[in-house]
Length: 127
Image (tube, rainbow, N blue to C red):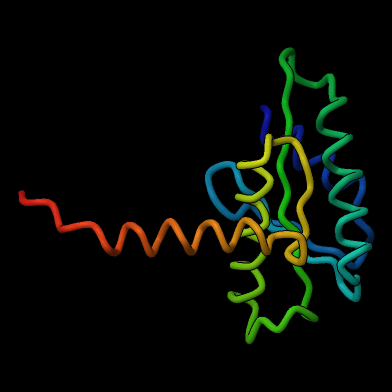
């Protein structure tokens, strides 16, 4: 019921040339045809606010968003989705129920790279 309500709210803020699909268990992927990063973030914020204010289900529901654009150098669709996914995790790490753009994730990506480097330096566990 929650996923249905959320998908309906998403559709209400999307234009006729935009596409939405379920990407994972509780993740959605939205393609905004011809939109730049500012428009993408604006649509994501409208969707976030619509979900936060929903009354279709009897408990509070919130969403976190990651937004990217073809202008950020991804080589293909998968790369752009990866950028949006990293921005999504930055939203989750910084408190949830927010929109984060790929170009706002430099600090998050740097700390993530440092953590990965530290993990690589740890001795392998013996099983």
